[in-house]
Image (cartoon, rainbow, N blue to C red; front, side):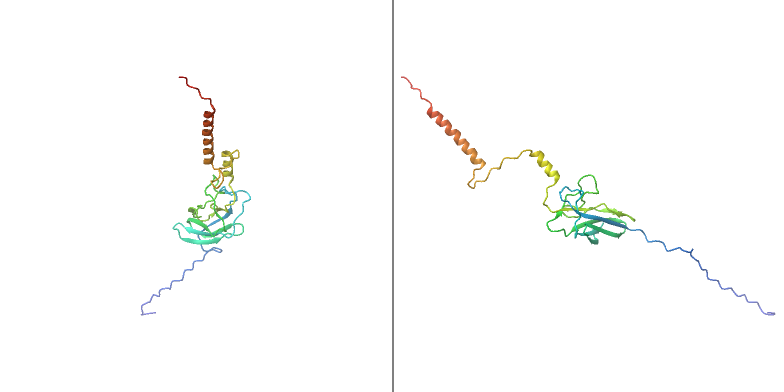
Length: 209
């Protein structure tokens, strides 16, 4: 363009497109933990889950976080099992309730094998807090219950040591049947009466003047 100033035309920037590599996906979600275990019938009341002791169905299991807030609830199946999934990292405890009629909690923390003992407080039915980390599938805390109609092997063994022979019948009450006190009194009276009779039957010596 002769006689005219040249005008510079700025080129427009081209859009930049970033292509992701083929097959690449969004970052995976953070892994979570789980808790599964069971409620079992401690038939011999020894605080340990022995072979053959079965699970208890229909027990309500409540999950608590470390602040004591209920964050989940489950019910045991026919085998006594319960499960909680999708737990974030933290400390949790469980509590068992709605036990079958006539059942109560067994003794906790018996023995050294933590996988076969009961972990629930015998009064409250609640376990201590345990830590769950991402990726855990914890199976460590369970609950033992019993119906109260059996005697533990430990107690039976103690009874055999303390009482190896049958005990004599206990004295009966004063309702027309002799009591221990009555026997002692009668024995004392008989001894006194015998002494008096012996004294009366002895010949007396005559005193000469």
